[in-house]
Length: 229
Image (cartoon, rainbow, N blue to C red; front, top):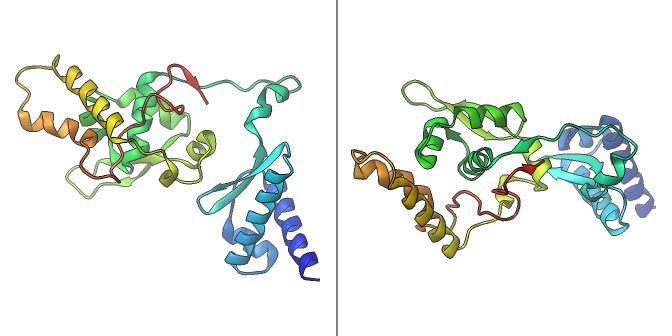
């Protein structure tokens, strides 16, 4: 009887996710099951594991406190043979660099992004908002109330991670390489730039604390030239 109840819960979660199409909050799944959120979460995780073990063409993604049913990425080429190919969003190095900074430093202001990159970033940030990979997450309690930017649920879905905490960390060698690259770029900037300003631009690449991750390296899909998502 117990197994039958568990399978029925999985079936209800499956029906809800299939019908809704988009991501569904854990609270909504609990309401559908008429149970507590921890029990709904367990049902969703069992269903996700079953889909994975059986190698199905669909998968159950967890996006922080939401779940979504979607097709597996490896079957994209098969799908476009019978469906209209969606317009691909080409992310240049500049846009990917900006996205990496936001992903690792979020929530972050445009001024901080530009301080790290050393150049204006309006176009890159606007393009990321247009692609629904970044959104305005609030306002900083400071003069001018500058906007804070963070990654969206779509970002998690596109890059196949459940939360920003799952982003890959840089090892010390990678941090040092990135720091040296930025130092080289800064040599070409105006000589009147103060030493304090220069130090602040390099701050995110300094290997001070293990948990303070800088922008992603040129692997893993975060800095790849003309990467498509």
